[in-house]
Amino acid sequence: MYLTKEAKEEIFAKHGKGKNDTGTAEGQIALFTARINHLTEHLKQNRKDYNTERSLVKLVGKRRALLDYLTKKDILRYRAIVKELGLRK
Image (cartoon, rainbow, N blue to C red):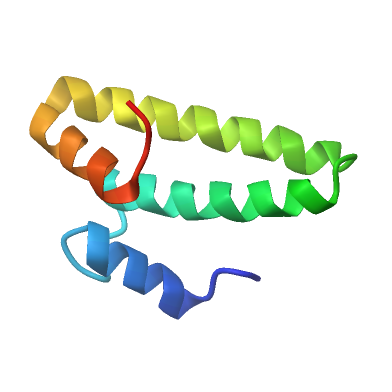
């Protein structure tokens, strides 16, 4: 798999509360962003891979839902994660 255990721990350590805290919204959003970036690069080379395209659309929807949740829950955390990951909006 393209995302090793160590890479996931690094993402959660950087964006979450710790390397073992995988449930925070920020950690999940960061993980989804890494997966979205990977799938986007894959689709640039494999334009007809419709299964991957569908997976990408589902991931973007999940990330959007988490961002919406974070907006309602704590706007400062939302602004921080959007700025940190370089997401639009």
